[in-house]
Amino acid sequence: MNIKFLKQTVISVTVLVVLFGCATASKEPLSNIDGTPVLRVGVCPDYPPVIYKKGNKICGIEAELADYIGKKLDAKIFYVIMSFKNLIPKLEKGEIDIIMSGMSDADIRKDRVRFVEPYMNSGLMAIVRKNDFKKFNSYTNVYKSLKIGCIDETTGETFVKENAKNATCQTFGNAAKGIDALKSGKIDVFVDDAPFVLKAANDNSNLAALPWLLSNDRLAWAMSKKRSSDYLYHRLNKIINHARQNGDLRRILNKYFEIQIKIKPLP
Image (cartoon, rainbow, N blue to C red; front, side, top):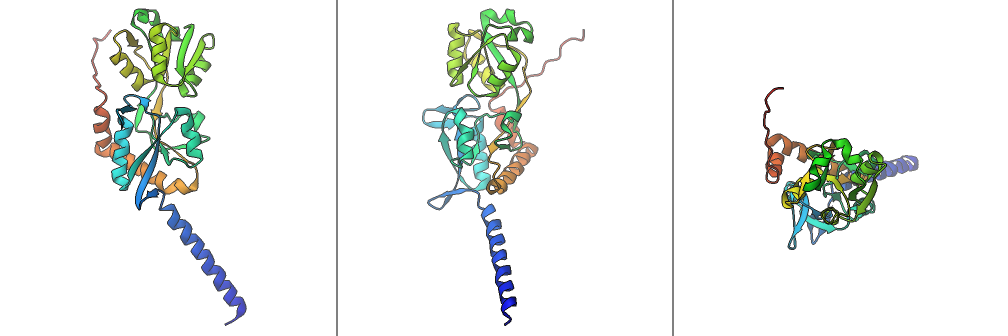
């Protein structure tokens, strides 16, 4: 055989092996523990009803969605618990496969992660002490508050600092601490995502949620931008879109929210 032809053949075969190997790897996106496919889900479970702990169990909307996609992927869900501000750094380091922790697909995050199609429309809301409710007859009055609380390194903090520049922005490590500060009078308003604010108002008779959204956001799952996660990313987009179309997504959300529409008399 011609030596030149032999070299070309070896090179061609090598290229095919490399390409085939890359294609195969892209379809094996999950980790394995004892031979079982595992999806490592990063969570900060202090955010009812979206994600929270009940005893030793992770519960909430995200937990049910994790179970749902686990079944679709034929994979076991392995939760990795951490603070909210550590979720994206851990994802970037490859220590988790996905963030499912009530994260909004805000533009400020899109340079570091990519988001699967959102599973719920949401937004920021404000919660106040019920005795102060009448002071906030307009959303602009929220911005005039002297002391506004929010969670550290979230879209709530960004929103408050951009829109209430004359107020003091006090940040907290988690939402529960913010609610405690509101009840004790250390802050006048607490701003956070609508699902948590509505749940907190429902659970605390001395607090009230202001009845409007301060922003329009969407809750979604965050994933790495690395090519190694492409296959899983596209697979999850198909799963969530199909769940929306066949009603599975609405069935899960309806367990946690009661939506009522009332028609007022025409003015």
